[in-house]
Structures are given as C-alpha cells and as structure tokens.
Length: 351
Image 1 (cartoon, rainbow, N blue to C red):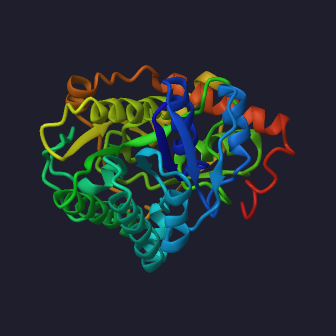
Image 2 (image 1 turned 180 degrees about the horizontal axis):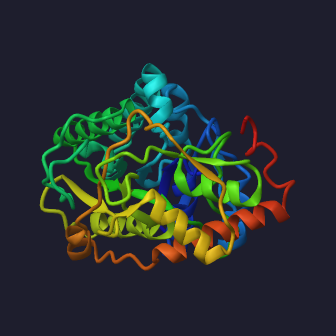
C-alpha cells in the first residue's frame, strides 16, 4: 500500500480524508500537535475503518521534529497538507500568529518532501484566495482579488510557495481550493469538533439547537444579497475528503500536464446564511434562537464555485445535498451529547 502522510490528521477534514484514503487502499500516518484538534477523533476513524492510526504529536513549525517523522517513515509516497489555523475572524485579530504558523509549517513540510524525494503533494487551499470576486461562480482562472483576511493571505502565499517549490524539484502538486466544508461522516463517529466557540456556521447552528449555545448570531444581514446575509457554497466534508483520494490517484497515474494543478471543490450552488438556518429548522424540527449582528471583518459577500474542472479531470462529483449536510451534522451533534465524556474539551470557552 502507498503510505500517505496527512498533516492535521486529527482535524475536521483531515480525519474524514484519512477514512477515505484507508477505504481506497492507502496506508496513512498523521501529524497533528492537537493545538486546534482532539486526538480522540482518531478513535472514531478506527471505528469506521478498523485500523488504528499513528499520530505524531509534532509542531510542524519546528523543523527538526518534522524531519524526524520522515526519518521514521522513509516509505512515505505522498503528503496531504491540512495543518493550519483556519479562523477568518481570529486571523484578523492575530495576523502574525497566522503567518507564522501557516507558512512556516508549510515550508518545513516542503523542505522535508524535497529532502526525502517525495513526489506527490496535495495542498489544502481555500476559496478565500479569490477575495471578493467580480463575477461568480469562480473558476480556477478567475483573477484573484486582494484577500479579505490574513487567513486568506496565508492561502494565497501558501499556493505561491508550493508553485515555486515544485519548479525546482521532481515533485508534482495539486492545490485544492475548498469552499465551505460542512456535515459529518454518516456513521456519526467523526465530525466537526471546534475548540471553544465555533467560528463556522453549521457547528454554531447545531450547538445552538442542542443548547450548548444560548443563541447564535448571524454576522450581518445588510449585504447586497437576496436576503442580506452572506452567500456561500457549502460542500459535504466526505465529498471534500474523497477529492483528496482522487487527487492522489491523479498524481500517481501521472495524468498532470503541469507540475502544479489547481481544482475548485464546491457544489456550484450558493446558499445564504439565512437559507441554511431555515433548511436546518425544516429538517431537524428545531426552531433556532438567533439574532442579527454586525458584519464580521474578513467575510466576503458571496462566492460559489464552478467545479467543471474537478469533474472532468478528477472524476469528482459531489454526492451530498445541503439537506444531507445538515442531517449528518445534526446526527453528529446528537452523538456528542450521548457520548458527553468522549470529548471533554470541545465546549471550553463557549461564552
């Protein structure tokens, strides 16, 4: 089996991707210092796959510790690099923290990939690289506007670092630009597990619905959209995860025409925040308590994907509807309540 290093493997998308990789015949090791994740999530991965995953609790910003992972695993064939801080709001408040963590960890991983002659690299990017686009849906060729948040800047810079790094190596890379991953594995063994108060819409919805949060806030309802709230392209996390398996297979089959390719991962459909709230209320039967608040710094008005390239080149077709996304997220939240001792720290500092 091909061995893949998944950085940020205890994170939301990382854990789901590990499941998909194992189900498609890959061997996996994880590197995650758990500063924004909980290694208990790997127990859920084991329940789904029947395989225990080794996690190296390493800060990837420390080069020597990162290097040691590769020394111990000289048979690594590819890398999927998720490990990064990802809160738009926090990045506005602490930009240097984001530049330091997200870029230094990437550079160290790329140095090790070059040193150990690892040929296949998949980078976790984001639709934030497009900024506030002039036209939607966006394609991979849509001109990038200035990023609206420091988090978005780190993704723009991260992409450029990968592009330049592969020019002078034998490595082949793929940049995957996610839109808004939501939902949970249908088994409810793994799902999104925010540390502290959730910064993303769907966990804020489910935590409010179950009573962990007394009320949620809609960040602005005065945008120039159909109902005044932001519009996003929500994509199920399992669909996102499978795209990484397809991307690796694409690299392994040497199908690339360039040494660094880019794919949008979205459904090509935009939903407003208020539409998502209404759909959750309909599917769950729970009436949400929410209020309209001010805009959040760093948020773009509206964005959704043109995913034709990923469909044509990777054979990637999203399988989950918005209803599926919300149903699986709610099932995961209910499971967390049933297993309230499983993750003891996920509710810290909610107020």
